Image (cartoon, rainbow, N blue to C red; front, side, top):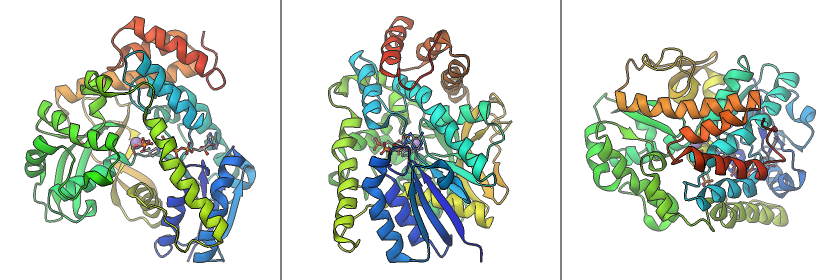
Length: 441
Ligand code: NAD
Ligand code: G6P
Ligand code: MN
């Protein structure tokens, strides 16, 4: 049987160890001959690489392990690139969030002006990795988590339209476990769902158990009170900022009680609430640097020091499971229904065919086939039109190096109150991103 070769791009990411663990736990589903880590920051990647090598060798010493900053070595002879790069790393995320928050605007990684700013920074990093892949392994698939996924996906559509890249998000996957729990099922795999929208901007319009019974009424009724806080979710095990996001979904359901909203609508429906609850001096980037980053790096340091993974703890989440499921679907033609960010092309009838939408697709050896959604309601269509225009404007601003298009992108965003605030933000972001953005004219 064929054995596959994988490169993880953004090897120094906090998510790398859990993806390596998941790949190793799933060798019966996806047999491997090589796992490579690639990053452009050797020092950071080295904090994780030795531990990952130990994990691989403990499981199957015949699997080749490579950690490198050399793109040719990384991308030669690979079948899948699992990508999760963060251009500018967490200190730039911190600036994205804090510059917005200090102007009294939502300060968030992918939503609002911080997300648009991150988009402009991310585009060249992702394109660079796609180009390495196409040069050294033209048959490889890139499964890409790199954020902000909506803008990254639009940049792929415009600038690398024939590249074998599939952009994905783990948020709906996590929320589907809550939905399953609310419906009294074991996990998300007990359901068939239909979902449409943009990345971090979509809705479930149909949720059924495997017998075809409609679960939407029961789930929506529950969510009116508790949002995504499911019966088995213990508050003590949640980081407070995420707990708040799950709970706040109750208000999003109140606005439209017919569809199940992505939890990210907190930022777009209720930006005033978010602003009044955020601390401009300590944002989510700080929480991540103080917790997830420290936890992952110290677990890896311990494995390296002990020379064994025995007694160490690395958390595995559905983030890793989903990307490995996608590789399995492509490799083995499973025709699993999966949520992907793809060109609309008529899947949503009354929406721009050139928009990158996040919709349920069937995945097999030849890629994906989107489900068809017909006409969507006026509210969802209007929301999506405004947001997709922001995302397209960032990519146009990148291509044309246009100051005005970037200013328009901020102005059009639901989280930004006026063109004058948008301009103040843009001018500060330009200075903060001078090492990353093209010079805008
Ligand atoms: P991180 O900062 O811990 O790691 C990112 C790594 O990418 C760093 O080691 C950095 O050096 C590397 N990198 C930056 N530019 C690069 C380039 N051009 N080539 C190769 N490597 C490069 O970040 P994290 O918190 O682990 O998150 C990683 C990424 O995954 C982020 O973009 C994050 O937003 C994204 N993410 C997406 C989803 C999703 O739903 N799509 C879910 C979780 C995380
Ligand atoms: C979810 C989203 C990702 C986002 C992440 C942020 O998983 O789908 O797109 O990157 O949340 O999580 P963090 O813990 O870094 O704030
Ligand atoms: Mn996401």
